[in-house]
Length: 187
Image: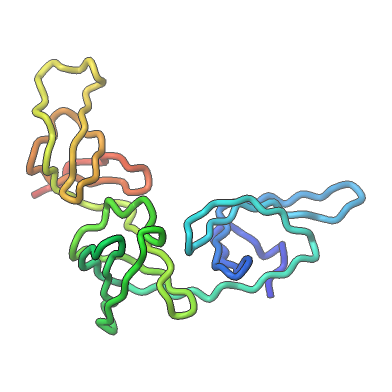
C-alpha cells in the first residue's frame, strides 16, 4: 500500500476502482491539522482529469500496469483494432479509451498500449510522428498576412497549421502532444 508521501508525478494508483496516474501534486501542512496532498489525477480508462485532496492517513493500492508494443490495424465502427506484436492477438479499443489523439492513428503504426488487469485501457502515442500532407493550399510568395502559415490535412485526416512552403506530398514531423508542426522530414 502507498501513502501520500509516495504520490509523485507518474505514480499509478487505483482510485475508485480505476487505474489513475498522478499528473501533479502539492504537499501542504495546515497549522494544527494534519498534512494533505493536493493531486491532479488522470483516469487511464476514461482520460478524465480531476483534482483530489488526500489526508495524511490515506492509503492507496498501486496500479499494476503493463505496456505492450502493438500495431494499429484499422478502424471498425467506433472502435480501433490493434495487434500485440509478441502474441499476435488482436483486440479492440473504444474511441473513449484512445482519446482525442485518434486522429494520429496511422495504419501499420507502432504504439504502446497500457494494460490493466490484462485488459487494454489506453494508448501512448509517440511524441513525434511522420505524416504525408494529403491536402493544403499552395503558398503564395510574399503572402505573410496570416503569419506565414496555412492549414494542412494529413493522411489520417488530422488538420494542423504548417508553414507556407509545405506542399501536398511532403512528409512532415508532427508533435502529437501539442498538435503542432515540427519540421519537414527527409524523403
